[in-house]
Image (tube, rainbow, N blue to C red):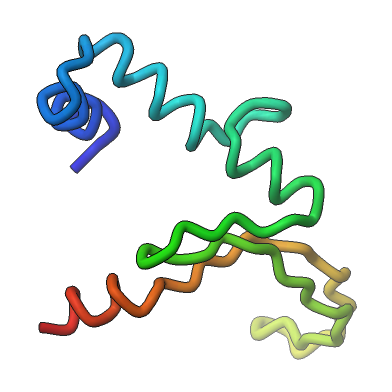
Length: 97
């Protein structure tokens, strides 16, 4: 399912127009700077929990040394913060059935 299909299903379930449904989806999931409720919360270092569905949060990967496979040269990989999602119990159980 892509975003357009999701908007169509949301519009049908909630009696919204497809344009309004797309606005709702964008307001929640947009990843551009300063937009998207989930992304803004993650930028601020906060987590977003949707009970039964899951939790979006950030993780920090420390700086580490890696080896380039082509020439075995050692290099330093800088620290990195990345988004992570952990599914909730209800969603995990539903998918595993």
